Length: 192
Image 1 (cartoon, one colour):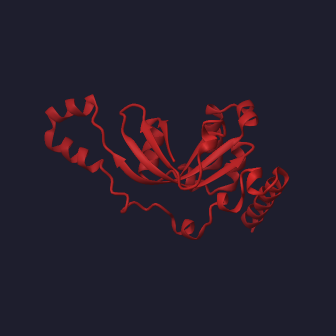
Image 2: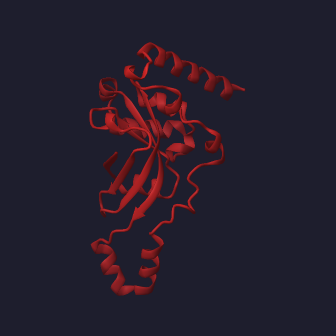
Image 3: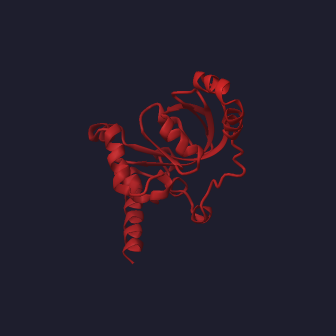
């Protein structure tokens, strides 16, 4: 299934450059439809450029802090977990998180479509050669992009370890217990 989502330039660029591998959203009715191996078409709000990504994993937790604690900080495109938490709190209130819960979509970029905007056309008339080089460099060949770090190659996404709905055979209590076990293991590994 294909989904379309809009992103700000800063976040879009992080995904294109391979520094951000997870998209955080509220687990509301719109995003409950996202499953493993779905396609997401991200549209950059300011220019209309589009990026096609594959959904490699889906993680659902009560709050975004839980997702941030479970996953390596490098997946979020920031240097510290505290910075990620501050940025998420600016977007989603505690009440929204408790009402809808938190969704982490683990993504892998596949293809970017370059779309011209008015500023690039103006720039072309002044610095044509530089602008043409810049324009062609924006068309990414994602076979050359490091889509997974060395540790991610052997890492099995949490979404493949935890079932997310009662129909799939796991109760809410069993899911919570599994998440707690993973948290404890991560903390134990971190303390060593």
